[in-house]
Image (cartoon, rainbow, N blue to C red; front, side, top):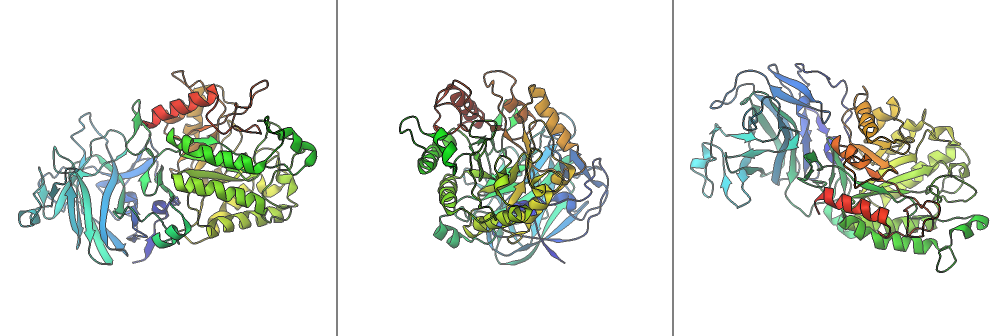
Length: 568
């Protein structure tokens, strides 16, 4: 059987062709799923099964999974058996979990379990107290293990969860949930086996993750190389969740009954490496104390403030290699670009960029790195120079082994770009270019954005690893939810995470605001703040010079609200 590298588990969204939008029976092509660098994720709807197993859509999350639709088998296994071949390259102990929900009725203890075993490996379960159980019948003879409360037959665990919304829950032993563990003693082929138990228990991605907490690197970077290079942070996409270092963000967190786990709250901090190479306009950005502009000071103060942002729950920043409007909105004659006219990298900009990426890497923070801005792309000579710039910066990132990045090709590709390759009809080509660089296990996660209130094109949705939206110009918080719903209704949408990374609406003290509306629809949200006319140096995160500290009332209101949502 062909071994398939599952990109979805390595932070790379799998293009799932022709996912059903209604329930139907499917028999998928048999395949072997390969663990890579301690991580394996199985899309259960792509496993090999027959009716009355069916695939169905969870309309809230947009995720597809499987359910058993016939009789229930509480004391008998091997009915409706699904065999899932896997290949383990790295032996050891793995945690096992999956996404599940109760999809019928109003009793959280019914329609909530499935039989599971793994042939030729030792599967057991451990409670947080340290108590361990093994499946029947081996539990009767295995020293140090008890039999689980409730049912277990023929080497199968009854695996259950208790949630009406899709969540990561996979426990065994009634009334005292134990987490599942698997010992793979040697590299080789194994078989995961599922069997029908309850009807209408929705199950989705099954994840095996090596328990070695020090193994934080994937793809080309092993643990030793990561340590030598100082790399600490790896961002992944697992289903519609963001994971950092093999754990979902805001793990286990709900706020006002809305799921927070897996989201990526962020702030537009695009001017971290800003400079102005035009001496006539450079003087406009002088600091109030020194009366001079200093790009090195700007980056130093940015880096110094990052830990405070993180402590308030911020898990990502947007940084642009050509900045953004240093006035908040509008462009004039300043020259601010990390690219030279033919696409080569400016080393001064790269040194400042390296400082920010290294600090984010140390903190466990993600950087949404935007390559181009419509106020500066004119300083590249032509589309050939644009392509060269994309290749050069992507190669620089891969060579520096940063894995804490999400790439945004350009900010608002439907605005006034000079070069055709940066405009909406062709921007998917540059997304594909970045995705094609590196190996399958190390390529970067890529998207692009559109102007406030506008949706990405069908080609961009089809090509992107995650979906970017902007809330500028959208006055009603209800429209935020509508934007999300419209993206999820697009035929090309396949369950990618949705991220707002620019929105200049606040009202965090109100019951309804843009951030809460995004959260209620399970989309990440990003704060955009600039200095308004008449405001002080301390106001805003985009107007240059920037005070990067949490210094104004508007900044404080956002970060306090974020801290509340994050549960910190």
